[in-house]
Image 1 (cartoon, rainbow, N blue to C red):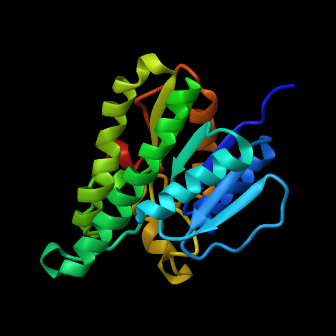
Image 2: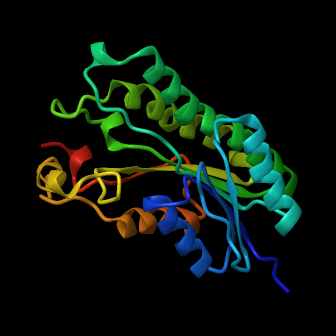
Length: 235
């Protein structure tokens, strides 16, 4: 009997994260989902762990829960993150600390622990959800802190992909444009749509399909998949 695969998904309570949880469940994976305020689960094969993933103790609990409950970790999707859009000179020390803690610390602590388990297994896959704004800035969307922090989780993909290429662990990234999620007010949708060459915002399902492509593309590592309506190509 084939062992059931296990996915860990951060930021899993709403939006893209919730879509990812549902998609991996449909693929037959067991899932451990985390967010700061995620609800308890009584669904077979789905365990939720509430807590701030930037806390090393929470990261440890998330991965140990996966191993203790399901025996392994096959995939980690680093979806948790925050986006603070302000002109550079208006960022506060608290903004800076929160962006580093969530976007970089949240990635670092859980990924170290997940990769340790994957190394013991001899296989695994890590996907970082970043933002196309890291590579293609837009003057109307000031995003220096996102570039500084999500840019770090983008840059590390190639570094880790090469470091672990011979050890059966892949690292990839999905770079979305602006996606219709509960984070964006409906009133702003027309403005956001106009930032994409295709003239609309992306959907949660479109980002999920991108992650699932990378999940199933076993010869692909160190890749950035743009799900951004042409934003990365130019304007």
